[in-house]
Image 1 (cartoon, rainbow, N blue to C red):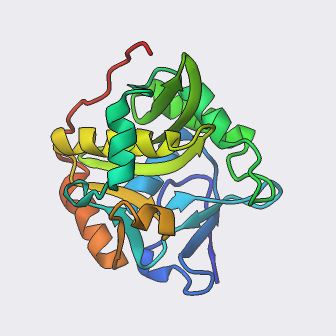
Image 2 (cartoon, one colour; image 1 turned 180 degrees about the horizontal axis):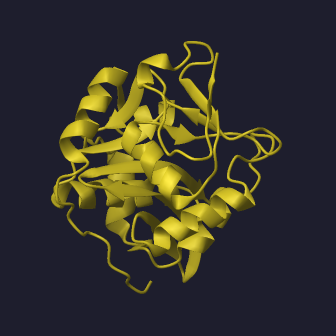
Length: 229
């Protein structure tokens, strides 16, 4: 049985109570308030649901993560980066990035980044918790991604691309910057071959929880700076 979250509490069930099938479903209900979202990430779970469904909270086991020191970048992508055609900024236009991430995709039906979800993460951005990466080509926004930074951990949420390699360049730039600023782990949530190609790998949920306990309350570096494309 899945726990339904009470409206009066921000607490989540123990991660060990997450279902095996579907993998990681931990709880349902609650709301998307900034306070509950931060509580969720700190606990080790995240929201993921389709329009018309109740809010669903997940903590898969294993958890897909990327240690910044293990980043792998292909020679072909390094060559594109060296060409300098793309420019990358941080926190320049969070609203545009999350809106682009919510746009329909050829391989998916609908989106889990609902208008309510966008509004909640925009509040987190205004509070300095959620951040965006923008990738520009000839002054146009062609790629990007967003996520949350808490302590020395970054929780990736979604990315988009409107030009070949745009989202990849944004991701690599972010990971290298976070590495240089002392971040210890990037949460990628669930396995994809795309993320694995960059060096992301699964770790047991218990190990992921241990990283949360050690690094969430460490003084966080501040790698975010608004700059113009």
